[in-house]
Image (cartoon, rainbow, N blue to C red; front, side, top):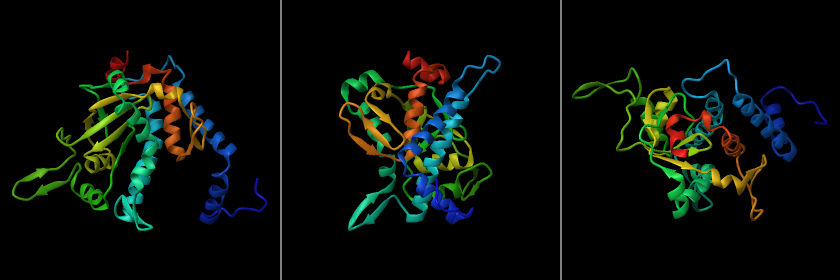
Length: 267
């Protein structure tokens, strides 16, 4: 594959990823490897019962954690999400999540689609520790302040001494469950929920379930591009975003793995 020996150090690894990460056939192979892992997790095993979260969602969490921590590290590097670039502001978080948000909005902002594919669950509880979650954090100071002040074992000692563990705030925390990807997208209360995720503590409820299944007949990720099959338009997207989309395609055929609160709205 390579004409010269690659040193097994940081420089060599960077070279390896740079060369490997640009070839379409390799990216397709990488996507297939990941999807084969998901298929293996979805195989029926009559000797094993899952009483809480199905392991495929722990697998999905590998990629949502990657997305979340990429966003967090970029914000910590730059200070916030809006970066001045060539005399214009560029939002690095919105740009990163744009493919997911675009697909989500095709359901949310189309009247017919909204009426048929958006549900209001009452008891869909999301675990900061175990569920696949993406939050739209945007400010480095808020990330640091929330990590510093929220969590088990943190005592706030001002006028009244009180514990400050993560507690759901129904007036602030807002989230959408993206079916069939099995991903919870947080759009309000982002920094406090991120702190709970970072420390593996707490739960919160989902406001809406969005069924995006109908979009899978129109869109496909091939390892590099998100392709609109009706128009043949191709948009290069981040690999890990495309992985979530394509694992969702597999999960359409496995409704049994989803939480009961999700399944009862989609029957």
